[in-house]
Length: 331
Image 1: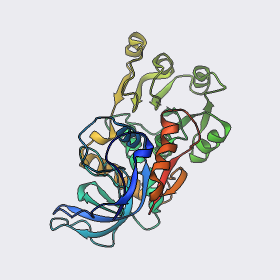
Image 2: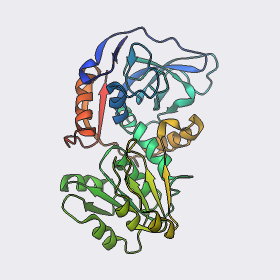
Image 3: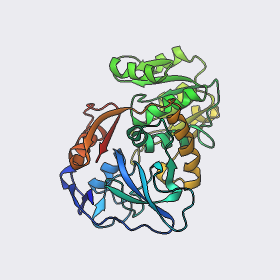
Image 4: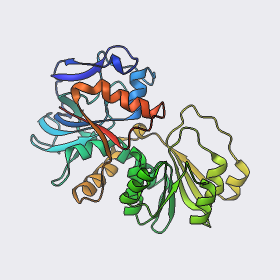
């Protein structure tokens, strides 16, 4: 089968496209024929040499996938050949990734793709959608109807999912955008208000739009400005952190605890399969009902995975701002 892989980490040019053996299916796995995959920032970190875990050789890149089940293992009962499915959280912890014609995936990570849901949209919202769901609900932000949430980067991969899911949950959404074009995307996704962070005073605008503060402040930046964040919080407000592995910013402890604030940091790929299934199944229902839109900013054939990584890296690490939404690849 054809796949996009590398043997040694490095720049996007290390990605090769060629033949590798088709994987054999284990007893608890399904063999999925890929119809779409998506690029994520973490994919570029791993390809660049981030030593989170040992990688198989050669290493097939990618964590998100949509496709059709071709074969199931002896212990799999929830799926059968012909089922349309999607998944995320692949290519981590020593597993092979998804940028291949066929993938052998543990059935516990697969979610059925209902009629009415598009394969490329499912791949595009896989990791970012699960990330948004994990952070917004239950033990993290525990967002409630009628609350106000502020989202940094509302047109980005995760941010666009947070905007939509927060609206579906009945919240009032304030999104940040860097341009009028991206502000229009945020409004189209359901944002009630948009702050233009490059031309407006963000703190003053949040105070104007939410005089009592925001209940949830969703931070996507790698270097958070905690003075701004804490000042913007309502009483008992929550901060959600999902980036900034190497960041060491100052933190205003006094103002934070006086407001009885709470801060949660989480890493999507560390969540157990059962926890992610709650997210995945709800995302499938929203996709089928047309309530969740994927922001696809660019598409490539799988053979151009190196070019796709170059585009992602330029925007993730070098601030090129040439991408609004996800990069999707197809066979």
